[in-house]
Amino acid sequence: MTILLFLTAVFNILFVNVSYAAADNLYNFNWLDDGEVVYVIQNKEFPKAGRLGFDLHLIDGENVAYTDVGGFGAQLVYYFNEDWGIDLIYKKYSNDNNQDLNSLIGDLNTKPLVHRVESAILAHIDWIPFYGKINTFNRIFYFDWGFGVGAGKLDILTNHDTFNQKNIPLTFKPESVTGFDIRSFFRFYAHKNFNFGLEYDLTFFDTVVDAAGTKDRVVVNDILFTIGFMAL
Image 1 (tube, one colour):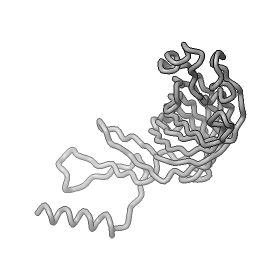
Image 2 (cartoon, rainbow, N blue to C red):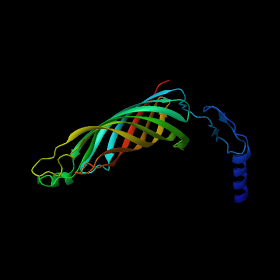
Image 3 (cartoon, rainbow, N blue to C red):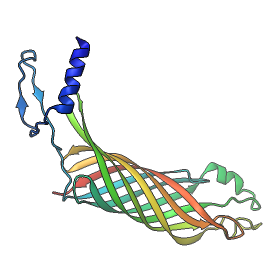
Image 4 (cartoon, rainbow, N blue to C red):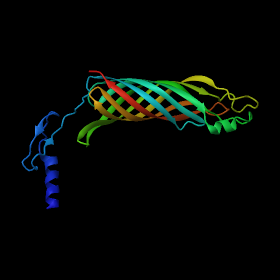
């Protein structure tokens, strides 16, 4: 009997035409116990097509050698349709020496090579292929999961000019570099105009990595906690 019910459910999912209904439509089914109801929700409750979004980000920087990284960001995004959008984001970082670096720089003859991102302006193309909903405590929460690729300008600090010189304190030099970014973001929709979520970013840029002036790729990654507003 269990196998028969399972096969019937699979058949209905694969071969029966999908019926679309508004979120507030209510259906009664004869096979349910008295007093039970089923809400049928097929369409997206909070569509994005043609809408403008504004997000605020709290940044936790990861994988930055000898540095504790935090920061904030702001993003403007426009959705062409439900699956594609473009955005522009500004990030501002705060960088502090971590314990490992403080232990090393007590001796002016021992300094590591350090790269720090001060700020970034990046533009992305976003693809949001996944949309879903979770029914918890008799409430339905909507979410989506997307990806982005982009590029932009980064202002960084580096000590590659002096890190191998003795009797010189830790000294940073500002540089502007071109960076490339890939991202994955997950959003919950609390309301048609408000959402919150989590994002993971990987940013790549080339800079000098040794005393000989050799350039190579440096990778930094951020975890972002987001709060968003969607305009009508």
